Length: 97
Image 1 (cartoon, rainbow, N blue to C red):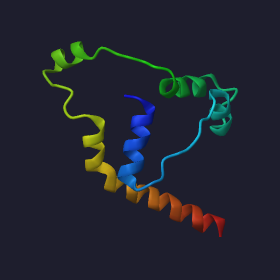
Image 2 (spheres, one colour):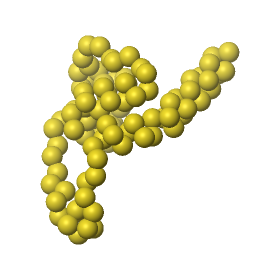
Image 3 (cartoon, one colour):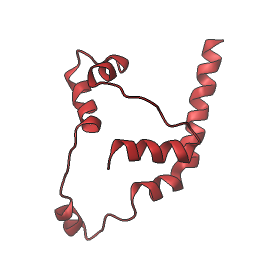
């Protein structure tokens, strides 16, 4: 799944505007407070570098299939995320005073 597709799906489901512009990997690490953190760089690379994993053995071993895609599954859980973000925003507003 492309990061842009993930962000688009989440933004639409939660009624948030799509981000604009681009952020370099270096700037992303700075924004995340992980510029000198190898584990932060690794986590960022999981989003910013194309990774492809063959899951066919997993599906075969478990007898399950991958099921519907991310967009369909996320839509079912969007209300929970929307409420969680509202709680975070409210807590931030209280802290800001």
